[in-house]
Image (tube, rainbow, N blue to C red):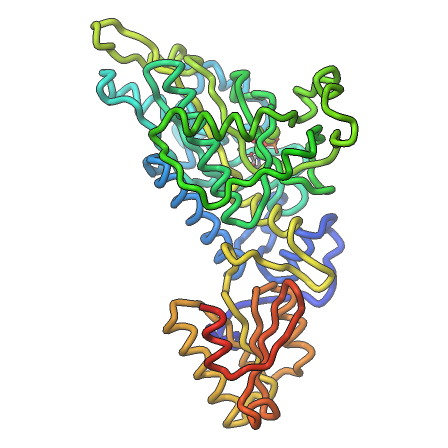
Length: 439
Ligand code: ATP
Ligand code: MG
Ligand code: MG
Ligand code: MG
């Protein structure tokens, strides 16, 4: 991509309405533009990162055997009246009336809708287990939308739902989600710690939230510092293996880690004092087992092998896809801007031409651009007629992991400069060697 042809409306000034660094940087880097309180347009750079995050979520869900699908953003209120949540959900639900006076709503979550799909189509234990998920826009009329995409009103969320014959099977689905979430966040360069939490309006008392530790987080958390040493890494996992998934759950959830709603001073007191931590965290996901709450309410039953009719055991599992952009930036930035982890970066490398219009420099930049593209990478070539300082500042702000700087002086010696955004370290090397380092 050539920067001269791209749409990257970077801001020089720090927007005063933004209270936290991720919101400021997303506005300054031209990633989002607010359209109404808590509702944003995703400009090209922000949209690109959103898609990268979404793809990782898809890949890890499919790896775990979960099936992608899509439900609408607008729902009829009928199912919610049937489940009893239409009145219970409260002011966060955006209620709409269509021209015929029918009650509609913008989906804040989709337990009812998916349970209706299930009950209309599945009647035998033979069709279980089943887990389907979607990545879809949600709307919650948050009382205080703030911090940019962190607490939006319209936000992008992955929501998955499992249907199982027994509690045991449903807990295996729960564990599968826990494992797939650990993998998902690690691929984004994030440490998200599973913590015992509260069910809220989804219901159920067996639930974990995934929290990214950050001072700007809205949740208060209490944990044994030993949990921060855990990482899933690149180990192989068989998602069909009950033992393996259970083993991971135990490894990651046995040590004390809870949000304030479930915090227990007595249990916390049993953690060695030097390992007791109180901190703040950003909730980037949550998994729930809620048994037959929705299947009882909506009559989602299957016939067992013995011919008996039973309510299915369910759970639901969410990831805050759009909130993750904010969480990643909170965890990875410096004074000059964003530092994207490789897994989610919008472009792999920036090419900075120090002397646009110089035939040799232009040709070298174009050759680098072609070579990177041929290797399957996406470079962003700053081909504008700007001062070098301004080009560097833009590259630092938008946070691409690598910058290749090309100028007539270096080219005389056959070299370009390769700079790491994270460490700031630079080295001079032949253009081919720079390309080889990035692939
Ligand atoms: P919160 O406690 O932050 O209000 P929640 O517990 O109400 O979140 P869930 O119902 O668990 O949210 O939804 C799943 C995920 O969707 C959350 O873990 C979070 O990452 C994300 N999410 C929830 N509300 C918002 C929002 N208003 N803006 C952006 N992301 C959100
Ligand atoms: Mg909420
Ligand atoms: Mg919550
Ligand atoms: Mg939650």
